[in-house]
Image (tube, rainbow, N blue to C red; front, top):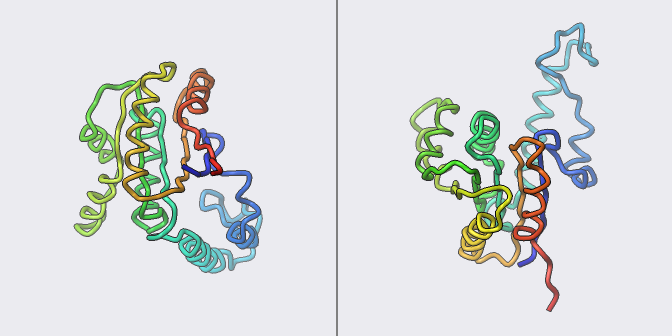
Length: 213
């Protein structure tokens, strides 16, 4: 199966290759107003930033949606290592939910949580739900759909068997989507001392390799 791979950690939240894309170039031309800075601290204190930024944000969202190929594009697999931890449940999963809610995640996306904790996927749903505020009944229904894109696999970060089990589940989902091309993104919501063993096993068992017939 062909595909692209990317590993992300808490400090590497974007791909270095993305800056050359048309969407990235368009985004780079937009002014940015940091809502956590006072007007005196802002680098663009001209009184019109909010209007410009709001227009620019909507334009960026539109460009991103157009680039997603939402319903017919490649399958995407997002794997969260450390899925049961605070970083994942308080930050990563709520962010993924927000992207899903706003149609900024392709429809053919599977989100796999991987951690040492022995728990069911229903328990993972409970962990995620504690840190997400839903505004109305429509969002509650949409959130239930989001949960159906989530899966959980238990395993160690230095043991081949856990990664083999993970990739068996991942491959089954990718094949069921009838996709010959799948993009995988790995997020390490882990302590740095576990990075080496985890990335070694990702390379051995999870990395998409392009084959030429």
